Length: 277
Image 1: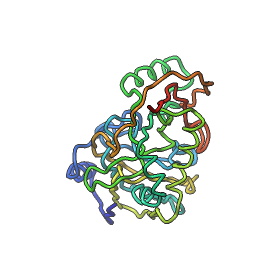
Image 2: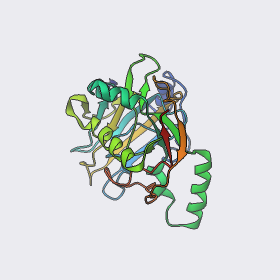
Image 3: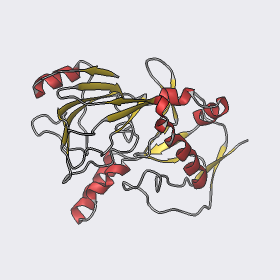
């Protein structure tokens, strides 16, 4: 993570700054500027609260190639609150028991844009649009333990915002595994807290960190502008376990693909289970 203070840039200068780190992408769901679609506007107050920013997450894990970096600058800062917390998922992996490291490294998780599904609720046109978005962004599998493409270090790569379930295990097993992993960024020793100042720019590695934006500033206004740097397809370190796959007759669960809460309805059952040879 890098912090740049007192950067009074125009939007054109801000985009030029962001392009020095790589190709900028356009978010398919977030509100952006009409003249500059690369810039996501995060403008919130008591009448327009943020959508699930108070969950630990890495940005856009629903993509086949999630972003490499996130860049945010402050344009309006509240008089109280509004910090951003970041957690090192590399440190989270390093702190695990060696047996758990090996176990998690053999797992893959299915990810979905479930946090944004609430945007299409309530109308027929919204449901039609949701089907279109599902075709554009189908569920994608990522390794639970991702290898950073630059420093080659392993890190935990699941998030309650996007992760639906662990592949190859039963629903209750998936839920227990994910609930343990979701608690890792909550450990204070892995965290850094950003106290925003006017005209501050922060860039962080979206691959190896998760972030959390509390709502403690409401009803005051907080306005940020975000740029996103294109990344690559995540890869893990372990070979897949050999085994045959067979169908399981397990009970289904509710379609928990909406926003949900921090601890509930975040996983779906897998209908496949690996049988070791």
